[in-house]
Image (tube, rainbow, N blue to C red; front, side, top):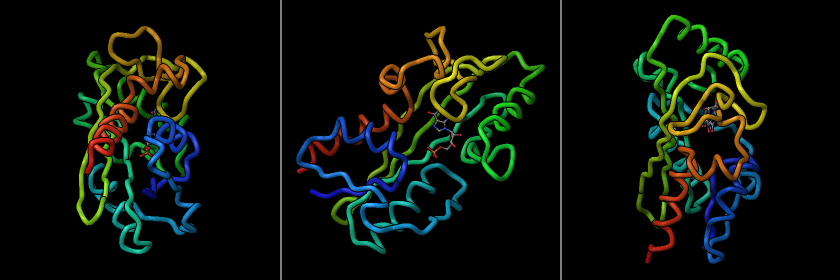
Length: 192
Ligand code: IMP
């Protein structure tokens, strides 16, 4: 079966391909000739994942899944959430986003946060949603050089390291996206 992952991020593609059964051929947006920007205009992660998956299924006719992730900070009522990529404004910039968040939490004791990934799968005319959550804390300063986005200031629950101090293997096992992908793969393996 051919299945489109609505992304051009090589890291994400590799992570999924590695755990998918061989019977599923994973295609990227580039592979199907989709180079238009798909506007993520929803106010929820699920909504944005749905917009991306539906765009591909409706315009290109493929079974497809799409993901959307946000960092939800408890004391900020779930912000930046669906707006995580552009928290500090346009153009998206990870350093500015982290600085803004560290500033917002400067005087706060409660530093609880969670990453949440929502995946929307369109398969043979049906739609399925999957969720992955990784709980943790926002550090008071950046730690580590690996990863991307908010990784240097996110410390997953039960670990001393930040995400940016973990290997991608280590991170994928416990991360929001890793967990959501595991749910998706489990579902695809059982799907008849
Ligand atoms: P996306 O939906 O995967 O594009 O994620 C939206 C935004 O959330 C990214 O631009 C990052 O700022 C942030 N983000 C998503 N996943 C991660 C992660 O694993 N580590 C750090 N930041 C992330």
